[in-house]
Image (spheres, rainbow, N blue to C red):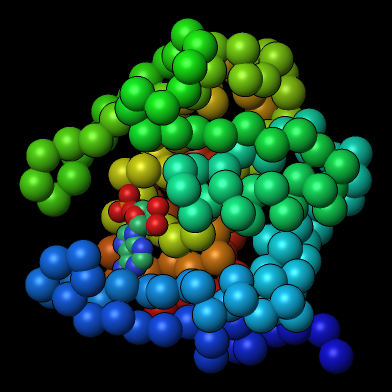
Length: 175
Ligand code: AMP
């Protein structure tokens, strides 16, 4: 039987007050540790795309790397990292975005994809959407063609999707 989003949802562990009071952290490590669920995540995230449809799957630092790599292998595409500031060795574009307190910056190598390349952007979780919106802006700066933005988990009540209105957004599990 194929893995369903309900199977994956049942394995996600809620950790209250991590990393700070008031945050209910969605811990996906039990999903990753189960080989059937791990493979199921890649199948569900890649749904609708076939090998040849996508040139590069872009993953957001750090849990997004796990899913982007698995989906890239399924779609016969390359993997490209969007990283937190200061981690990429070559020349980068940078985008800053607001957090609840302060701000953060993500970076992308200037030659990570060629103009017009078809990319799929992935992360583990969509919360306020600030991180993913910054990644979308980076991809636009290098003229990538964004074919979709996908997440394993979406915290729908935070309306992160509104920040990504220009792209096709999908999530496997919604809370
Ligand atoms: P945001 O920019 O608010 O959409 O936050 C998304 C990023 O923060 C993702 O890379 C998630 O890994 C992480 N994140 C935010 N909230 C949570 C949460 N409740 N549980 C797990 N990860 C979270």
